[in-house]
Length: 88
Image (cartoon, rainbow, N blue to C red; front, side, top):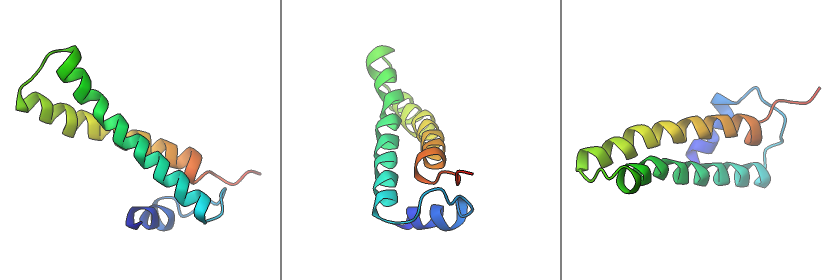
């Protein structure tokens, strides 16, 4: 709830394409759940595809690559789906 308020009031404050309400909060929740799933992809590849089983490889895959991928996904999807620009 705090991240939704911060994004709607600060990051995407000028984007008025979708009115505030339950639908926008629900979309925001689904985008964040997608970000959680995306953050697991590098860990899966590191461990099961490439065979890296050390703690350093897991840490790098999850906390560097996974967080970076989830951050980009959440920003782009929030910009396009949750807080779109007003249609002219």
